[in-house]
Image (tube, rainbow, N blue to C red; front, side, top):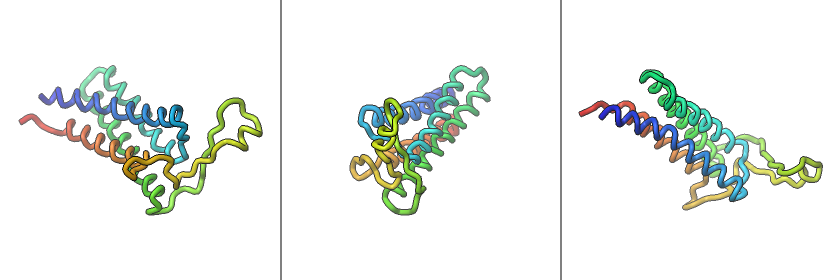
Length: 157
């Protein structure tokens, strides 16, 4: 039974960042919602978590696998905490970074640079039920990471 919980934790550690990164990329490339600087900050820990969780499937030894899954869960939690901060900036609960980002597609010319959209970190580009993408990342990442930690910690009855 403990082994099944670890397998579930390891699978969640892989699927959560995969799903959230996939969703972010779909919103970016299909929905044309370009990421701001803080959106990128949320993606980096998910990329790290994805690599760590994938390694947990191929690295031999239970101790190494447990460490990799735990580190992946920690990276997922970090992304969730950055999402909390970013959502707070979007809702103007606190001040955020002053930098904005811009996305240039196609050949880089002066015209493409000047006409590229500027993406602000303090404006939610999309919401559902008044929750932004950063808010959903905060929710799914935090709950997912805590679930992974709980699955790894629980002892058999």
